[in-house]
Length: 369
Image (tube, rainbow, N blue to C red; front, side, top):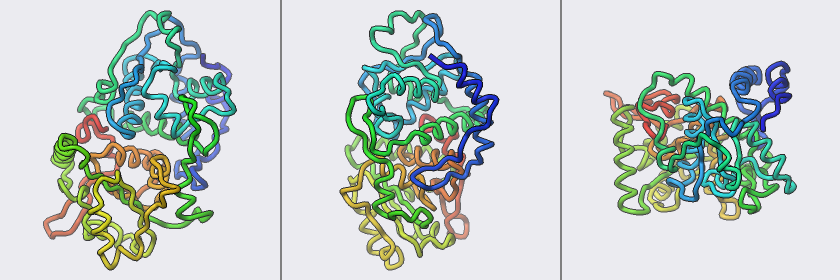
């Protein structure tokens, strides 16, 4: 149940501190974020009744890997907003809560009631048990796949879509896990900052770049689907259809050299299925001296996410929802130098073909938006 006092505090009193992730400051002014919080908090009902329309997330059958799951949750929030519903999540039977709470919003000190309150207040959702569900009279059910592909292909409301999605991404990062507490499956959570701490210690001002290498090599059907997705995105955005997949040294250097980032550490994160990108970069005399890999003791998906999001420069693959979540999060935190859409111009030089906001474009990204 939503607390009206919380809504009054958000509406009438400026209390929002600057957003900080692993000791690094976001570039969103607190005043600007407070205005967005006020806007969407005041649209959230203070009480959810049994007759209110619920857009339900349930079931243990997710659609895709980490990036898909995180985007699926964000798409569900958007679908509910557009249709005048409240997202309901079945606590003991949902693909969404384990992935959210593995990275964000851990349950602290076993206090499930407080965790539920914070989840409901932060995301304007309702957490339900399987026993409570029959009491609700207006419930819309969709599969994880249907929720993920909901977005459509129109950019008529792109500005508002970006505002709403980035608002909730910042909500996630205001509650990133630091290694304390458990997730919704009562498994101890890991520290989202561990990779950043392992690579750079207490130096929060260091400059570094992250390259996300996504191979699509795990299964033939996945590779075919991934290549088709990249081809569709590049046909709409003008990007090169293989550059972000191959990550050739010249492509990487075309980004880093003008920024002066070839003089600073370059970290590769990957799905671990194809080492050819790392091998090519290790064989390049300019890149190799700066190339870094996260040690196995500190390597995990959550650490990769934060390491990439808080980097000075990020180079990713627009067909990867993992890269996409990173790019969207960087935009949400006000961070620039994110490179996803590039191609050679008529002079043979690499240029950006689409703005950083294109990662949210339904026309370009379709279900990955």
